[in-house]
Length: 250
Image 1 (cartoon, rainbow, N blue to C red):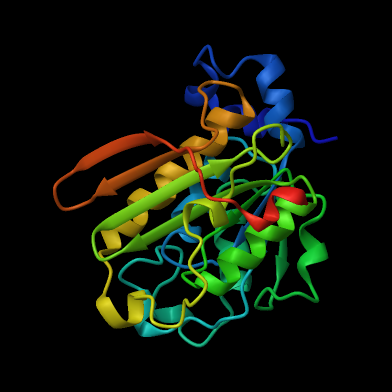
Image 2: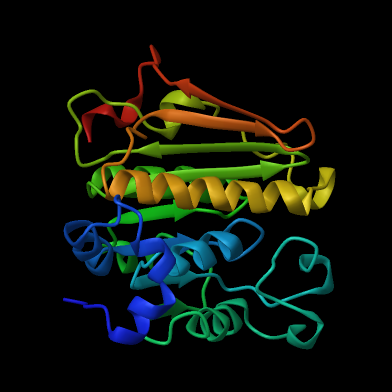
């Protein structure tokens, strides 16, 4: 069990004034572990704001190195980090916010052979920009009753949705919403571009959804938050599906 030190109470002093961050809720934040798959344009701000909000343990998974083309949106990195491993740099930068936060890292791209590293996570966040990986994470989290947050940012468009997989009474998952099988030609950031600001917005929304769910501040289950970063529009859509999802029997 993690506890907050006097130094941490100083760091988070303005945050802990809020009535939502009661002693009971602080205990919740100190005990949960959040897994972030993909330390790119969404994973960077998401991890920063989780650590800055009092979350005490993260698992960061990414096998990539830092490139110049990352710097417009992946705000944990700078020119001095080019060629270094993303998870190693991210861990070092996040520890500068709170040295007592436990940052676990895996310098690999997630696949079927290492998915079990996510088993003790309270919430797994997909921030990968890879649809095949998204579907794989969705199925694994559903099968293992791990809460799952899907995040996407492309051009100026943001989509974030949280699935409460602890409660399977009414099945809905990523596959229910997007049942397409042939995903090869889906657009990606490297082909259609991405606004760094919109990627950051996706990370902030994802962080707030995690805090909302963890502390029971607002219902986030099966609510898709969409945003047009250029127009500064944010909408919440209640998701229901009539699709006969093959994962319903898991």
